[in-house]
Amino acid sequence: MIDVRSFDSLGGADHGWLKAKHHFSFASYHDPARMHWGNIRVWNDDKIAAQTGFPPHPHDNMEIVTYVRKGAITHKDSLGNEGRTEAGDVQVMSAGTGIRHAEYNQEDEETTLFQIWILPDREKLNQPPSWGAKPFPKSDRAGSWAVLASGRDGDSDALRINADARVVGATIKAGESLDYELGGRNAYLVPAIGSVEVNGEFANARDGVAVAELDSITIEALEDSEIVLVETA
Image 1 (tube, rainbow, N blue to C red):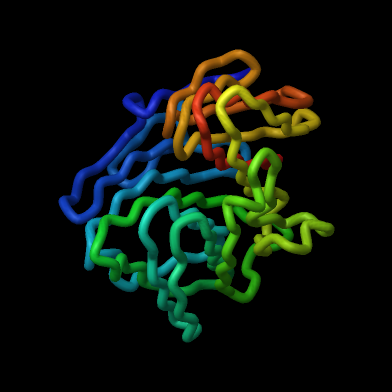
Image 2 (cartoon, rainbow, N blue to C red):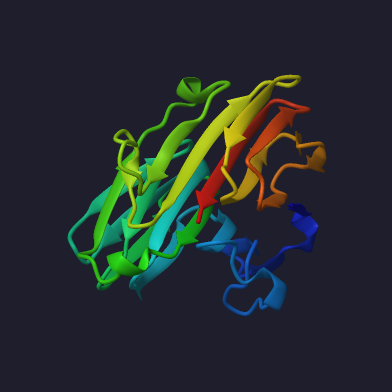
């Protein structure tokens, strides 16, 4: 099953400094048909104005993955972690028993990002909180998948999350294709840029593609494309 969710159909909010589109129910946007996909609870497409951001606020028992598309985001948290994550790179915060953090765009340009929340495995609830970030050069994922964040043993180069899930990224040139093996697991993917076909179903930039009950998918790029995909139970 493949369900393409157009960007225009997503929920959203405009706070002036923050313009957000929500792939799943979030804050004041509620759609009973779009509460989650597998263990993915949130996928927000955010635009954050220069020199603005989210003041300190708490989270617990959630794996929060931030994929920066343009600009940079600066993180500070109650554990004393500080870091700047720029376009193409990824940060992960495992909220665990509880953490407070702030996320600011301290740049002189707009920052755009995907923020993805994944529910932790039941047996991994209430773990000590943590934060980490890592560069993932786009040249290293040209025509192939790079594992950006993962809870699987063996994905040793990825940022760690407390969930049976993988966050992967790839860039695909127009006219080329890339397969991903799912083995019947759930997946949700979004082209950050470019238009693609997923098993023949068309998706434009920033559309969401929900996949279930398939052993594999083939993503064909109709334009030069950058893909972010989350695979979960």
